[in-house]
Image (cartoon, rainbow, N blue to C red; front, side, top):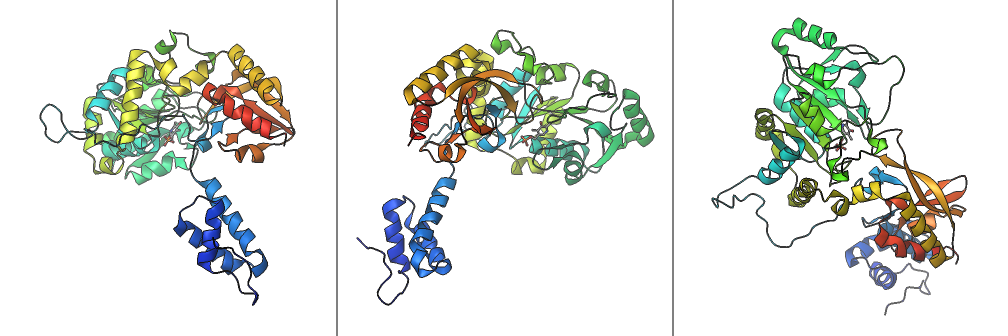
Length: 435
Ligand SMILES: *Cc1c(COP(=O)(O)O)cnc(C)c1O
């Protein structure tokens, strides 16, 4: 085995010897360790080359994408990939674009689109890479070189640089501001349409997901917009399918009270709805466009659709989720809905067990939040474990990293967002805090 040491002439170790030495402690590919060794030798004084190389290798290993335990209590945590989904790997080929009846080329959208349409009460549906892509494609396909009417109160920015005026501009459409920041009525839209004749191709309604405006405010509901002479496309954002939540035996949780849903928005007369797959739908990152068959088809035929189409893992995952909704097996098969509906008493019991197994912490009441801009301001009663001190960094370094929350120098573990299967991992991580 090569040992790295500063030789008698005070020369730094060779890149290769240092890379081999690093391989003893870090299971990273040789080429990666060689690169780290080079950087450490270039940057470090001879005495601490080895230490710097070790740090670089640890940093890289820790930054690799991997599973973590979400103990933050934010159900859809954008930093943690939003809705948790099982990756379904098949190393076989799939019939992604093969028509199984004819043996000819088919469309990856056919089956999934039909299931999603059925679910939403739409004529057709299309899956793209995310909701930003869905809005971009709808505006590009239906309003290119024409005008899109948007309420001034809905010309918003939603997380990560998704800004309605910029998306509209990128689509080659012109944005027509309607109404005022706090109040927009049907007659404001009507005036804009009358004034611009046939130029307005689309009314775009956007749910202000991540904030609430209160006071002297008024927006125009979809059912009124639907009386206008142009199609209405509604970005409902979070992807709640039905606000009566039939998959929860019709008991709609209070925290969902103000959330728009795909079925009801279409029933109110929207020509299209657009939503994210990885928020309240509980699926992988993607966006769904659902509604009138001719408009969905226009989106599917637009050249951008090719650039925005998801791969087979996403389509497969959306298919199993759509089947779970249609089968009403949502609370056993969709992790997000399991987490959202588990009774607080069960969380308290789990907390007690983890505390007695680890000898660390105390049971506490907590408030979880839906996250990802869904149902802003709403909370879901929860329970977990509180530990004196800030242990975030140490918990992140656990074999399976635990992502927790700190407030007032106390670490909080919210069990609502932890899968019960991970309770043992959590107990061992808490135990290790005593060392
Ligand atoms: C979250 C959200 C988006 C962005 O969706 P992505 O899937 O992250 O691209 C757009 N519009 C609304 C209303 C949203 O809530």
